[in-house]
Length: 193
Image (cartoon, rainbow, N blue to C red; front, side, top):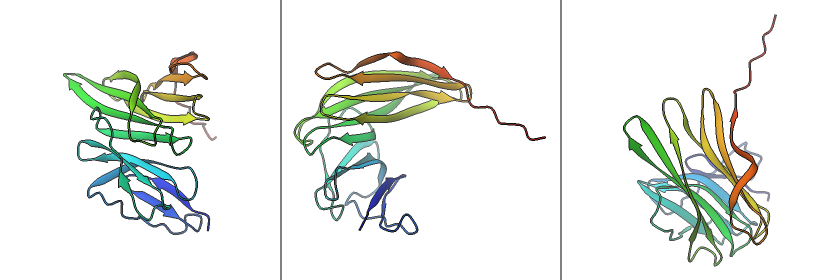
């Protein structure tokens, strides 16, 4: 059967084109799942949070059971998860801190090369926002063990400010020179006469 997975606060899957959906147990009470990625019908990862702690889960049996994966104690939410094979993957984590009138969102992109047994931070950055801005996270997307991108920043009524980071083969993750801190105004609503 064809299986599709989604994460919208809880983990869900369907086998009938979303006419019905199933929320399988994750084994973690109070988990909020915000990202899910399957490599094939058996190997998958789901990320999110439980309370104030980041959460990453792995399944090797198509989602029948999920096991927690240890992450560095650096953030409070797994916003995005992406694996290119069973060994190499990334998680984009985030946490917020408040400084009077501004809210600062700290982002960390962590990479594993051993299936999630150990993690190393590849990128640490922050986004400061005030007023009606809120964090814009993702996507992260990697086409191979060495090539990919990550996007995050802030968005709000006046537009979107996004930093794009890219990783070329053999190089560290670096800001993209063509798409950093752009301001995209919201689309206008057409007038019908």
